Length: 151
Image: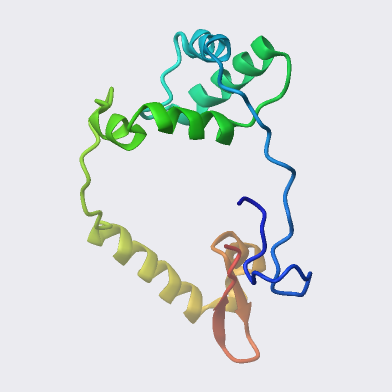
């Protein structure tokens, strides 16, 4: 069940998962399903924008039945009626989406190598602002440049 601990036992040791909020219970009567289908009008929960469509469906459905329902509850119910993965795969993208390997052009690589070589050879003449703009810090104590990892 959602939120149950991984260790099985009922303790609350460091390896136990923290229980989440209780799962909303929706009685999927025909009337409630009609509310869901009304909320889905104009929104397909598949394809390239499926996350955005699901937010709209969730909001409209919650408004229709008068209480907040999570997207997970809706997904779980839709998965009992449809093969969502097959629908995703059958969706035609509205733009070309072929996968290609990317290789940075040699000119750009060489340009950056030359820039770094020049900067390495004259760190005292360029000033720290130049190096910081490249993500580098001149370390004149060791006579080399250090790369700042910000990612």
